[in-house]
Every structure is written in C-alpha cells, then in structure tokens.
Length: 337
Ligand code: SAM
Image 1: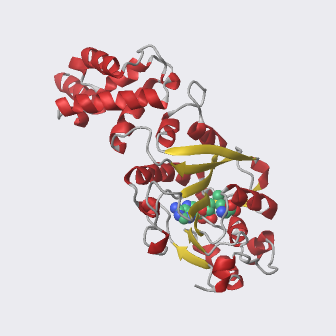
Image 2: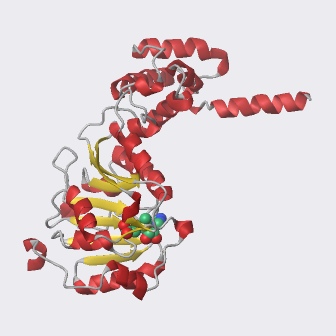
Image 3: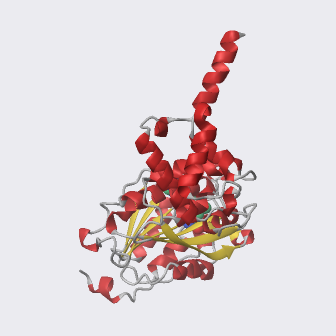
C-alpha cells in the first residue's frame, strides 16, 4: 500500500473554484434532474466532518456533480474515493480532481440505483456485523427524487446485510429535503412521525446532524435540506423480514389521523377484518385507539411479531392485498351494471 494511503495527510493542490469549474465546463444545473450545487467549501467540509473520521477510509460518494463535497472528502485523508455520477457533463471536471489526487479518486459514469458497490473495495475491509463499523462510508447530496427510493433500497440492504453492507455496518451521511430528514429521525408522538421513521429507526441509529438553508445551493431549491447520519444497529429492533415490517408499517400509516386499528385492519380480508384486527392488537398488546404517530418502534415490534404468528397460521394471509380486493369488488360492480 502506498505511503500516502496510510499517512492520511493528503491535501489537494490549489485548483479552480467550483464556480470556475461550472463556468469552464458549462455545467448549468439541469432542472429536470433537480441539480442544486454546493459551492462553499467551508460548508462541504462541515458536512464531511459530520461523517466522522475519514482517515484512510474508503468512501463511496453518490452524485458528486461539480465536486464540492468530493474535494472535502479528498482533503479528509481518505485512502480511496469512488464517485458515481449519472450526468456525463461532470466527468471532465471530476477527471481534473482525479489528476490532482493521483490514485485516490475513481470515477464511475453510472447510476447509483443500479451500481454494485459490494465488490468495489478490498475484501480486507469487511468486518463482522457485530464488530465496529468498517472504514467504509457513503456520503452524498442527491436529488430528492433519488434519495428517498435509494434510502429505502439501502435500508433493505441493511436488513439483508448485502449491497454496501456486505462490508459490515457501513455508515451513511446523506442529504435530504429537510422534511424527509425530519421524518427519518422523528420520535414517537411527533408530527413528522411516519413510515420512514419506523423503517429507518428499527434498523439504524439515525441522527439529523445538520440543516442546510436553501440559499446555500446554486440554484436555490424551494426548501431547506437536512443531513442525516445512519449507523446500522448490531441487532435490528424488529427481528422479522424487511417486507413483513414494511407491510405492517405501511398499513398502520394508511390513515395517519385515525386510530391505528383502522389502517392495521387493511392487513386482513374484509370478511374477517374486525375479528383478525382484534386478534392482532390483543396478541401484540397494543391499544387500538393509539394514532399511528403514537406507536413506538417497540409497539411495531410487537405488531410485526403478532402478524408473523398469524401469517404462519394462515399461509394465504401475507399475499392478501386490500387494493386488489377493492378492485375485484369494483369489477364485480361494473359487471353487474
Ligand atoms: N454533490 C454535488 C453538490 O453537492 O454540489 C451535486 C449535488 S446535485 C443535488 C445531485 C447530483 O447527483 C447531480 O450531479 C446529478 O447529476 C447526480 N445524480 C442524479 N441522479 C443520479 C443517479 N441516479 N446516479 C448518480 N448520480 C445522480
């Protein structure tokens, strides 16, 4: 291994500013791709510091764009930075950074939604799940339209310990629309409590570490952003398959202002709804008159365990989808007409 990789003292040489890079390579933000850039390197340094120590780390940056966060990551003493960028216009500017940081920056022109990171870094970085997190980090400021589906996909990867989590409990530092950051980290009973809160918090320790005002971005988006740090838990708070948890949580939040029994009832066919919902809530020892937002992760654990028991007793139950039942009802109605 090269000395520069172990010492962690690398600094980028003087380079054109991000604003100059944008001008030089004509990188006007494309509105359809929701591109908003961070030009202030003090701010990108701050985001990167929040990721924790990156000395000799292997970092996967998603959506580097003109490279503001990329520069801060390279200056943090990483062993290697792999960036995946979808928009080909950014590649020459990133190549300039790569030339300034020989052997440290790997550029992939591709899509984070399909890129496979699990074989990109050395095998030797892999840790047991129960060990401290590996020296592998994910950092990114993605468009909001990509970051939400991506975090759901990565949470599922956490539950299966694959994808970026084939290395162990890889930590992530990601930027979201502020409201999404608040939902991810919302505590029991708070206004922002939602499906995302439970899905993130049953698998990870989740911290909203920074709010970035809209005016820090060029062009300025309509809303502020929130940076969220995720560390997968050694033991998930709910020990059931991801798809089962997702199903219970999704149904519970179906009618967020009503009592929780209303949404949870949609887990069961209409003919047995009342009886089965009563059985579920009794088995789980959950008060049917709590609102979905008042349910803790522990409540969801009991609900998922009880639902699993009922699915084991009735193998058709998990395949039940109330939307299909509604649709079949509609079809019958129109047939009669
Ligand atoms: N990281 C830069 C910054 O903070 O200034 C750019 C942020 S901009 C909000 C999002 C970046 O992600 C853009 O460069 C965009 O082209 C890229 N991007 C969008 N969708 C992507 C995808 N599916 N895969 C990889 N990159 C993507």
